[in-house]
Image (tube, rainbow, N blue to C red; front, side, top):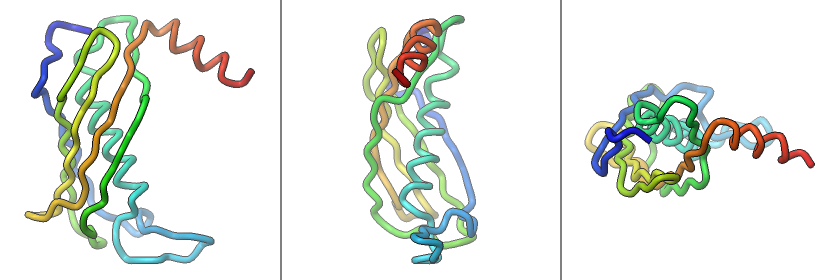
Length: 131
């Protein structure tokens, strides 16, 4: 990783809750709010944005873990801001805490870990995954 990686670096993702983001099971919409899995997807994007500018040429990050606490609903049509903040890192690992807010309400918090490897290592991990 580049020397620009620091604890406290942040990245932000802003998104509006659409009908496609509603939780649905067996084709039935359960609630007119953002699903937990869509929040998780946006949290992954925010953490990725916190990592990418600091990768060296030939490096790549892969997700290792994600935890999310869905604290409050984000209704359809509302905007959510997810901010990922680097809390820990070393030569091969970057950890971000993430908070999603809808207005003044915290809708979710979480933590995401990415591992950083030479791109060849990532290709080998993927190639060996199907064996």
